Length: 285
Image (cartoon, rainbow, N blue to C red; front, side):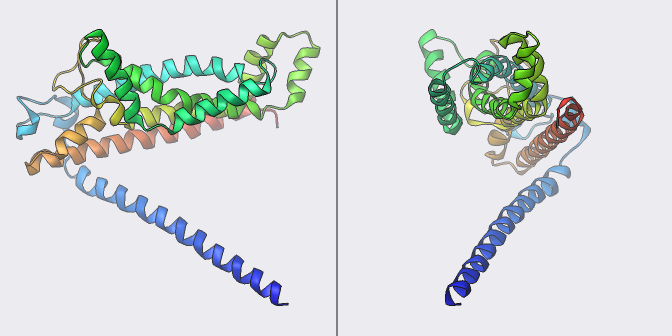
């Protein structure tokens, strides 16, 4: 009887700890989103979306953040595409039909380690290469840094989605004369499509919201880049630089940029769920 009471007490304590943990996360999220919305929404105007900074936004002069919005797009989208193209091949290779379990376990461990590396280290790695080559800050190295950042996340997401594909489907495809490659592309890929889409969009969300990896690789400018060798602003770096300004009106534009970035990330999440639900019809239950 005493043991039962003790276990019931332990269960209640852990339930309380779980509830408190959930409340801390939810309340923190609400506070962060609330601060961004309250300060950012009030600072939004048409000028923010249609104009670039005029004559030095840090000094409080007029202009918007169009250059940062476009910069985020031209950095994150190509990086996500490259990470996907590289990652899909790795994810397929990691399946047991293509490689030995020990090798795949080592590769997965390596990807997990890369996933946990702080993003600024990817930026520093690219800066070292830039210094060796004598190249300055540019769109090109910003894309490379984000590709390296997103690659482990996207690859592991696709790998986990492919791992849950029923073995019976693969065996059925083999019995019909399909090769390993045909089975991987036509059966495994389609069956794992919801997870693949979720992984890719998760990587896009991280890439478009990361600051450290592009802070010293893509640079910052008030202009819209016309070449991959030009430097470019991005929403995260704009938030960082603008909020450090001593001028209140400039800091308010930082909140506006944060609000726009928040909306973009939310839209990515919504699109991810919508595409996943749409692709579920191809999944065999």
